[in-house]
Image 1: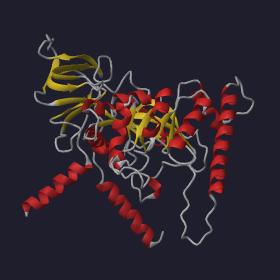
Image 2: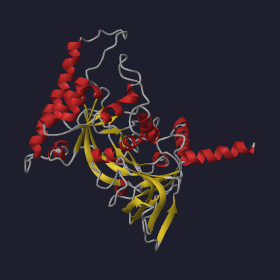
Image 3: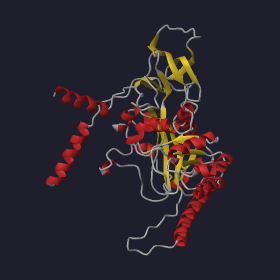
Image 4: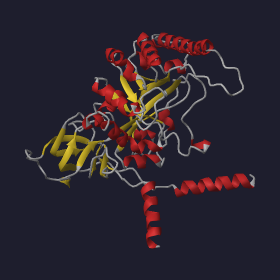
Length: 433
């Protein structure tokens, strides 16, 4: 081992040690908890200004108006939340969280596989519960995520996890909830590289070949799924089986009006109602989306439009336009570190034409429905998991969001994280000077 490699290795080990947050997952709930006096944001559009919420053994057992309640307080932990807010845990869809730790260190990247057709890839088994990133998300109320692979035309299957676990088995809420497809897009060739630009017809022909490959693969996968005992085991085709029986969902990434229509029609051809991811021009095909019952996972609003001809504010408006027209909307943020800002992106949408409680739904109940976990998550309702948090202010407002206490399946989780530790460390340093 030469000196440069040794130095790099020592530096990496030192960085890992420095980044150790020393946060252990919380223990199971062992006592009934009653939260009194808070403003309850149910997650389905309803708000209870002076409410109570009870949970026991990880499940919500009571929700209502505190002024009318007669509660049994025996053997219960009381939390006085007067003047505070209670929200269902926020859910982050379509993310490589836990699949990347240091983007500049190749050995910590496990989000993309080689090849175009990888439906057999499972993101869940690569999910790193020791990552230091989830703790920073929990501090802003993001308590669940859909861990999603990337790359190729068929990237593989995602899984929904809660963000306080010893390992991926403990973390899993719903395993292999969906397959993820990147719809083939005709590239825009820019001259100036010294190469001869391919004609538009050539580019379209290449894209059509990719669509044909997908079509053939889906046809083979459907035939394989309908074969009771295949003579030859094909793991890639077998991984597609649950798309056709309706127990697994299909997320398709497409942005332009033309690609959105083509992608939805492709999925419908195989009896699948897809969920659209991206949808920059989804506002141009609202009747088509409603007719086909399509949910749209929009990108974060703090971005620029794809086209120079678009309204520069369209990324801010897109979610509101769709939601107000009756389309189910979910919000995603690609960058794993930036996911801590997910609630503030929803807050931005609420400032651009969408009701505040509806904006809350795009990161709670709407997301839970899109991921297939609405029976246990997404809102503060009796029988659902006690995955929720208490904030001293509006959780969608960066200025007032202060998550004071959070629970995942009833467990009182640790809200410390590396960012807070560094803040304390250097605040102490400079205050002493």
